[in-house]
Length: 102
Image (cartoon, rainbow, N blue to C red):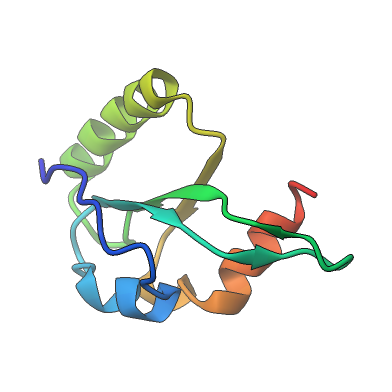
């Protein structure tokens, strides 16, 4: 299992996407993201993004999914997002998910 990598804080979702393998699950990073709310407020949520691509081995998916839950609980992460294909990881995708946490 690949360890959690802490990538530079100013990495964009598109740059993060280029770091992910297309056929293996990963906890790519806990990413700090500058989010501008509709009312102009700015926040910097810590987003944990879990990659579980379609087509990877079921054993790998189960191993990562089980340990992901323990990691999320231990780190008290609240903004946890899963992608099933690296193409999903875009600026728009992340903004849509963060809009839920107004």
